[in-house]
Image (cartoon, rainbow, N blue to C red; front, side):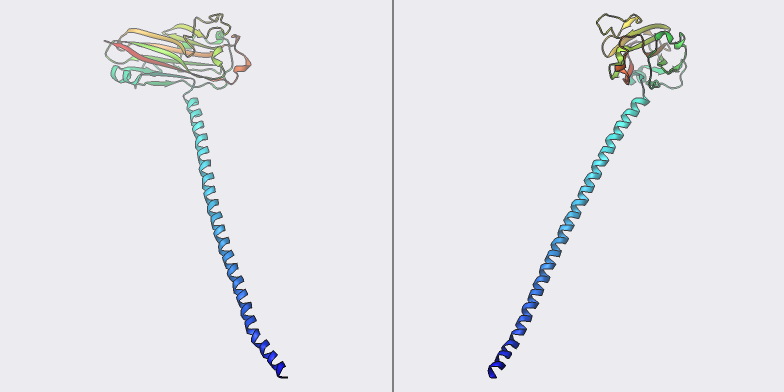
Length: 267
């Protein structure tokens, strides 16, 4: 009997120890869980931070792409706005010597740049279809199939001067210049320019002169250009349908011209 009581007492002593162990285990598990939770929160925080950084990078890339597209559009718009033909004089010559540009023989303000209207989707025609009086209209007077622009170069100063001018091809795509014709009227005198035949056969039959080079159409000059004198220019540009190089390969091509004037001598 005494032995049984002893065993019961020993068992009773062991119970609190077991409870302590269980409590410890529970606390250990709780601590482990807390640590895992903290680690998961930290990982989640890092992932959120990475996500925010990634979003910012993507937003920046998108902004850059938008700016690139906008710049390309602006360039395209500028090209369209200031079209196929631009006339310029040196600003120094305008300020110091009074050389100026105007779309009419009588002018209110001095201008150093004039821009012709652009023609979209110009198709080929024959030069014979262009009106004979095309140089009798001031300013821009395009048709659907040719560019026509009349302007005046005026000596609005007090000195007699000499000047030079040069008509250039400033941009061309798809070899459209192979079939382009440019007629320049100076004070009513007409000269038609075109590239030499692509087969090396010389000047095209409908042209008076060939382009001076791959980028220079023609040059002009005047000596003894007196005060208040005016030179009238008309430039007509078209795609010559009778040119053997007027083929489907040049469809969609573009071309831009610029005519620049500067004073060479002043008295």
